[in-house]
Image (cartoon, rainbow, N blue to C red; front, side):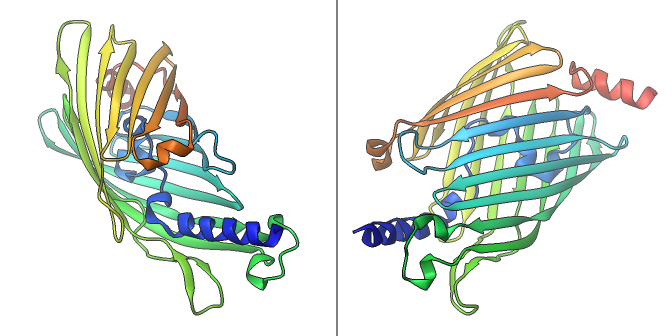
Length: 306
């Protein structure tokens, strides 16, 4: 009975593992962490930021996906940005670590408008601990897997005073994630293409509303679209909502505790059939403005004057 149960678990695991939708976690808080998917975002704020993210997906489901991310981005020079991303994904018997460095270059394309072009390079450390299944007689289920897959990505980020447009592919190479016998690939990475943008409307001196959209295309998977809207009050805190087409809805909140630190939270609830088997997903983010935060233009003036 235990062998049958483990076999069923492995089949379910391989189904999730090979599904391209699970290869890159969705974030309801994506607009606060754009350099995870777009290297061109690195340094676009004009000052350094460090973000810590934790996401628990499908609460109530044993061995459901868990994601932790540390990402940094800032300016090396007036024109060159730099970023680092370390992301850990854990689901069932797998641990996956994505480690990438980002570089961007700024072009002044018009008055008040900047175009950033970026490159991302790094790779994925993958560990599959089949031994945790215990007493499996099938060789496929008792041999652990540990490997490294290098990759690179590219992106463009156009930023104006009130809007942004983003286009990127964080992983260009289609690499084998798990190869059973050196010939037959059980699962592989697919190229992800992200495209989106947003615009900020001034409702009053103390209220700004920013609608945004983010689309994701992956070969062999349904096209994914996130539609979001946030309202910022007193230039201090934000509340909003996110709708992922035919998949989920989420509530979003972000609060600037001080000029140098902010806290974000998102609760996501599936609206597909998956909702019958979980209690939703939680996302928490802590973001540090390493140069004290403040207005982007002021920070750029300070950095160029020094």
